[in-house]
Image (cartoon, rainbow, N blue to C red; front, side, top):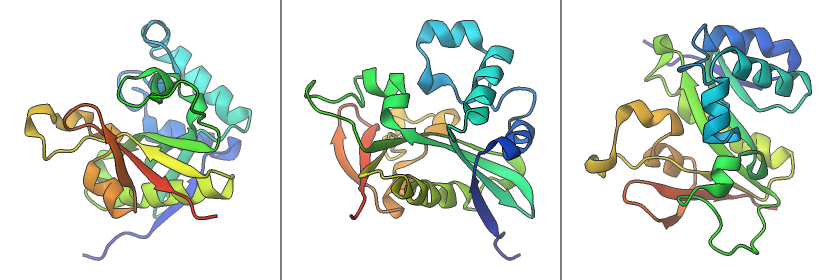
Length: 196
């Protein structure tokens, strides 16, 4: 069986229906609609489901392009959330990823925070294609660096496959990301330096 031909495109208003189709009635997972990293814990608990769907739809309608869609045979098969780091409050506040130097700026730094691959297309390299496309997209918008915050499954004590939505160390490493810090076993901060 040959590898599927994967086409990756930004989520624009004309592609909203494709994102909604991919995420399905559960909003990818438990009504998240990929808003988890954009909200506080209280906001996320209060907005799971339809409110999160509305917020994501507003981002797309406002041409914020919150991520990219992967298509296989014209059908939406996968998603990656990629945007300027400052749009992800949890990333900015998290002890795993916040800047150690409070004076440090995240200007020009983009983050890859989440993946969702339709169950029918898992194990086909779609997530890897999305990482590479996310780097290219961020670079085209002026990013000087792109970060990821994956799990490293080599640390079995911290690995839970249900949390693979943030990606894996090997996937980011294969795309040219390098580990720059690790504040907790199994949770590296990885960065791709964009060539200017």
